[in-house]
Figure 1 (spheres, rainbow over the protein chains, first blue to last red):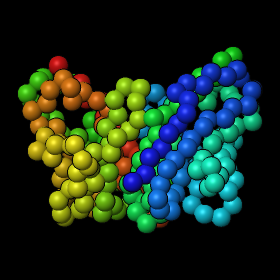
Figure 2: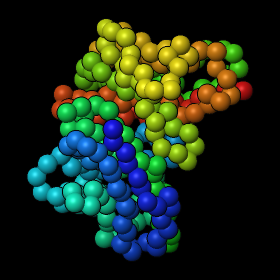
Figure 3: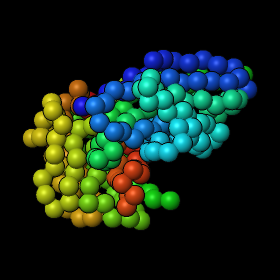
Figure 4: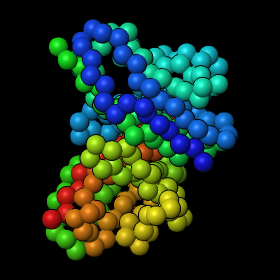
Length: 114
Length: 115
């Protein structure tokens, strides 16, 4: 079975500052890793995903994440945040052999302050 | 890109009644869909896998007699919350994988409030 831990429930940051949202996972099999964003009262939107290959993955809205197999981490970063980035961010994992079922982390609320 | 819709977007019902939520894939066929439940300020919990033309697969701890799932066509899955109670109040979200197995699209969610 897989599990996902997002280490920070809330991350306050000032506008134009860099941010890192942390995600660790555990699994005994090969996995795919995802970051989703959820705006209030909306569904989830895929930010980026890691399937294989380069460990640095670039996504939409200027976000990127780095897969670190030895540390079983998939931290999300953005060099300069905007007010509009305020949202809930979810890290998720699926088995590479069964990509339909996603296991989500607890979520991190990113609060961007002016 | 692919779009998944849900209907209704929100619903309020009385305790003891049943509520049906629809999940549609608008421009692709989905033999499998997934239903999640999200409590306020919490993560999404997978409830069940909806399989077109066969029975749904429920996650451990989910009452299949309470949360009835029907996947009658390649573009529609329904979740019926039977005999709803206030503790069933939640945000219900569906998702559907596209032809690319690693890509899923999520519906906008349905907020259920049981009085």
